[in-house]
Length: 77
Image (cartoon, rainbow, N blue to C red; front, side, top):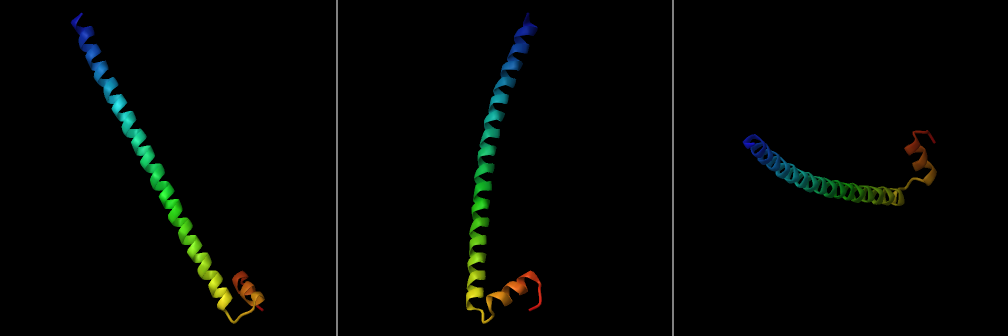
């Protein structure tokens, strides 16, 4: 009978450890998702800046739209 009691204590300890590990995993998942969202936002901001810089370069260029488009597409005018 002592063996069952000892075994039960070990199972209870393991259950407690399992619950703690589940909580740690949930926190890690939440942190991962937050970091992933922050990265996506930074990439979006960078892309917007690049798009704006490109548009300004096109607007301020002395080249025609057709010349710029041909250059971008790798065609000769």
